[in-house]
Image 1 (cartoon, rainbow, N blue to C red):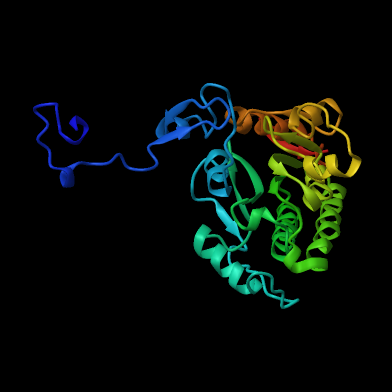
Image 2: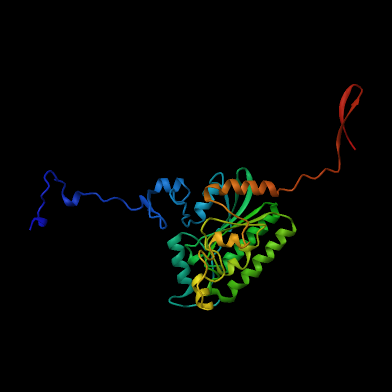
Length: 304
């Protein structure tokens, strides 16, 4: 019974004093299975150093990546869902909201903020998939609408970062109304010629795809993101046929004309800056041209 006895000599550390490796020190890529330490993974903006797989991240990480400093201004931070339908599934809707808020430390599935990106003003609305699957309810639609109004009021470009499983069933028709509401607000933004960039991340599905996510002046995506209205499984079961390889992935969607380009997360901030500089309106000529005219040996400014 040698396996019950310690045959190696010199091992004297008591079992109760042995130290376990703390959780969270390593990241294993779900695609290529390569293991890297979390510090390196974070420095690579939560993308795999080997295959480039983009890990799902939330608004806190996107704000850290995009904004120059952490002192950005969060907008409407305290909005929280009510229970207009008194909905109950496995638990009452208010209980589900409260549980999600405790777990994620978020108020709802989107955060909005105004800050500087490479010294350019930018309003960002970013969805959080960790909050009830990034589902779009009344608060999500209202916060996006208010962020668009803020961008219109201050004449600032607007960036929408979508990551959603679709409309929130617990609010039924109220959630579906947010599709029209946000689309109407974006139409007003377009009328004022304020740039709107839509960034689709993994996954962007359902009513979000059918509304504001596809209405950008530029629709862009991260590599490999799932983008579509219904999911591949639902479509396959509906039509009864096998789907093309990589169906509804960003690269497939780009090939079929629904995206302008795909951008790696490490290049996102610079690409967005280039887009905003390109979309800036050219300075208009002032109604009064300043001219220099010599008077009594002195140069003075005159209006023409």
